[in-house]
Image 1 (cartoon, rainbow over the protein chains, first blue to last red):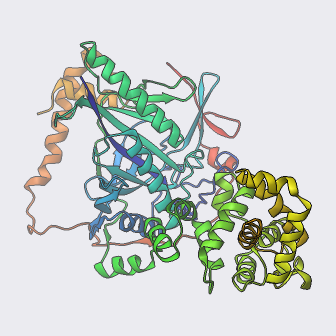
Image 2: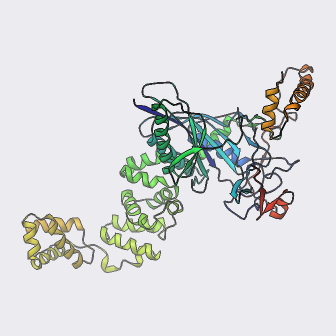
Image 3: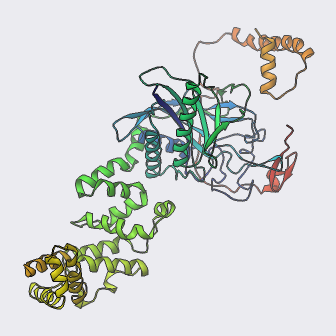
Length: 470
Length: 92
């Protein structure tokens, strides 16, 4: 029998606010243990939490960017559980009145992944288990999170992968989170079940936690799908439980519950007042949202004639698309800028992290100047490419590397002469070419480029050579 | 109606050990506590719903960092500490 995978996601995203959700301690990552703490975030009695305005704004932005409705009335609740990562023995979250509801993210196959809700809550502290004991660092305790909960709308691992990538792109683009899975600023829990193909009843689900990369999410889902199918095929029943994914062995194993009974006894947090959001405020925030990656990508393809694959690369990192937007200012050929970024600059900015910060020696304005010279036919493409490399090495503008003698390209007469000279001095290559070896032309082309010191236009040289060889 | 099972469950959630012979007494006491709290349901009210007693909403803080306390201060009340961490002994 064939089985269909059914999955839903719960994603925690750490918001990029400067301070924690209920106190003014910094949210900076790392730091010496227990140095980003105060009486509020270590849960001392008698302290009063006060909600960070920016958290509400960021959560609304996240909601709008994922097509959610924004609640006019929202409130905060206490989720009670006893575990050392929570000094108050409850987490402040939102239960029945979350800030955002009923959104969706559309996938490339046309399917919509429905977002049930997005709510705000506080992160827990970090536990380090060592020497049989537990060491607690509350620096992360109280860092603001949004939890994005989808409906069980995923039918394949590829859909899950695309969703997480899209979510990451969107959150980074609107600037509410850096979404670094390795650092834990984005964490996904996956609810997964299987059912016979064609059935519309949901099977028993398990929840997988502890995956710190998109690849691990995919691997864990594949493993868990196979495991559940195996259990059913062998006449067993899938048990509803929480599983931990182990990267090293690529397996999932049962996690002992934080609470024996899953009873959080939610109730309204009496220390925190209602959050009212007027329709005007929502529209104000909507106006501040930048163009979303998906929209931007389509615009690059349609307006600038950039191949879809390249447009995806440009819009994958916010800083890269900002760089591109600035570099194409006033140019007729944005595509050339795109080619230079992806062809030359990306080779020097290899890691994900580097592309995120996109700290490049050549400023967008300098790249713009270079491409402008190319557009004005003052220089040829290959010289431009070489010049760009030198600019990237030194951070100096293109005028430093292009002298008078480089300008203006090569006129037709001179070009014809150079081509003839190349043909005369390479009879073997000419013979090879005539014999059907297309590649032999490259030797002649190289010769001409050398004669012109890179100024000649490769396309024109090629055409001339073919014409002269006849 | 509070049951013995409720008490057992509350004990688990509260991480309290309750001996078998205490269960009946505690069940009775808990029932009395709930009944006492229930008295508020009989209090007269205007029938109007309200959110909180001060009728406040949107009390926010600006997102500006204030220096945290030194870790010695933070750890001052910790029953046990080690290497600038709160230490939780594993009793399992």
